[in-house]
Length: 205
Image 1 (cartoon, helix red, strand yellow):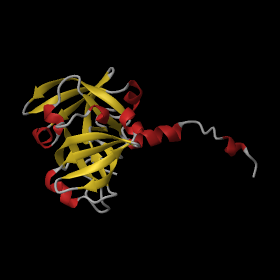
Image 2 (cartoon, one colour):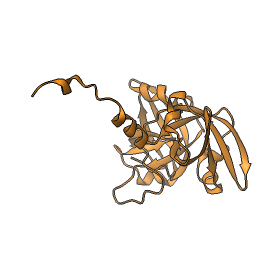
Image 3 (cartoon, helix red, strand yellow):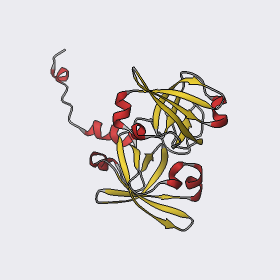
Image 4 (cartoon, one colour):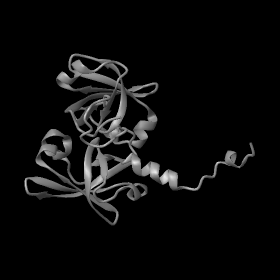
């Protein structure tokens, strides 16, 4: 579990083919000293397990399923990525609860300056729109953001200068593919409101 508050921006060193999919190496500077094998780390919003660490890097295994469902498959060496370690019990929850389970890949459809910040327009996969609500939470490439407005097939978020500097969002341009994770609370509410059709419920005790 994560909060959507980026700890640092790392960069992709390599993505090597492996029997289980790919092994990715990510440069992360001094953050590497705090990472341990077996821990979870969020890379652009994708929860991955660390398999090796070095002086200023870590490696993760990426399954074919993860490559199909996220934007990681298109990351080239040198690409900047948002990094966050898993939430610890007792930590302040400054963003919102982010699982690192990407729901789909959206695209940046537009942006404009807004004061010293920026207004970003995103087109998510159509099936995710029902989870996106004004003033609700959404994670984009692992960054916790508040939905400013929803219009048609798009939604907007307002980015403050700090977010632009502390994450990769400051370099985003139109057509960029980004990982989208909707608020897990919305998905649970939807499931609870669905008719209960489990056949076992019809059995007599």
